[in-house]
Image (cartoon, rainbow, N blue to C red; front, side, top):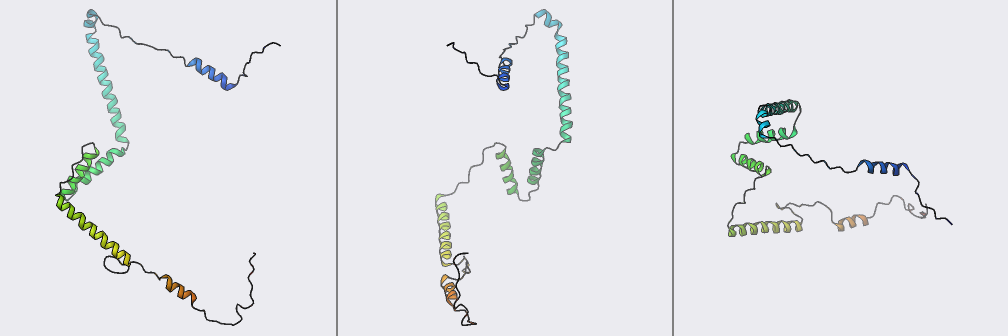
Length: 186
């Protein structure tokens, strides 16, 4: 028996994969800038100045074209910045102006200001006062009243609802429900 060599069936995918691998062979190009000798640099000094001027002119023309395009387009970032600036300048209260300036500076990367120092005893008293207020509210809530003492919930209790259900309906006919059977199967 002769040994057969296994050869897979060529498909479109396998053929394109083989072509792609042949095309994607890596080729490294290394550019070495030629060194300019002293004699040629003196001659080319004028040419280099002209080239530098031409490059500068080209860059300024590009920038001018970009500015013209920018004038026609609506930039949301600049519009947002202008709105915030307008809001800051039109604040009547100086305190709010300062807050907005600080907010904008922090947004642009500045360090936020430190919190104002509070005496520990005053801080403790304030926390105690807030805790007492919370406890009072909880007590009122348990009683079903709000801070002013008015009832916070208007509903009937379960006992009242049960009493209303047990209350007998007025009887119009005596044989009304007598002898009526409701089937369980539908």
